[in-house]
Figure 1: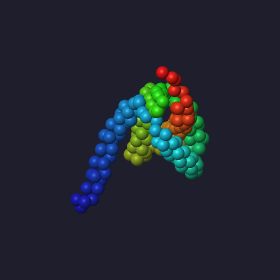
Figure 2: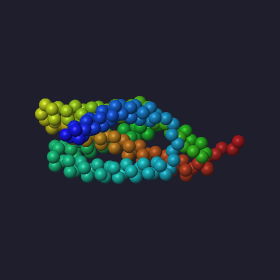
Figure 3: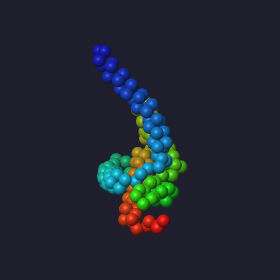
Figure 4: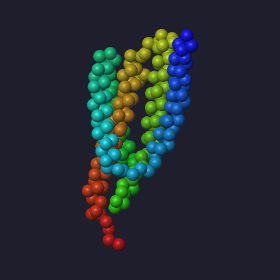
Length: 187
């Protein structure tokens, strides 16, 4: 009997720790996201390929989810396109610092804050809806940004942003590598 009580207690402790670490991890992500970073070519390429694989897996998931969630594919596609535009904007707002050997970049802090707040809203909305559905028996909305498809669209925005930002950053790094030896001015 004590073992049966320990399992739910352990689960509650795990969830409490997770809930305490979530705000800390979001704050740390925001704090470090505006830092100046070295654009390592292999890491930028790895990030681009990882985002491409994630996009394919996400498209498969959205297709399957479309059988149960009305408008899932449409919401995901529109969210992904919005994310692509945000990624292009994010790249345009990024500050680059290049010398003959290295390329550094610093993402726009305000855009990163907006995306981090979007993640926070998505997580809190999902938790509130899950609580209402399990405790009060309230059904999840079938349309709108709080629906399953709407939450899927928010994830698609983040994925589209990451994909476009990685693609444009890789182009910038490759351009820097190609021309770094030719644009040295004589002293």
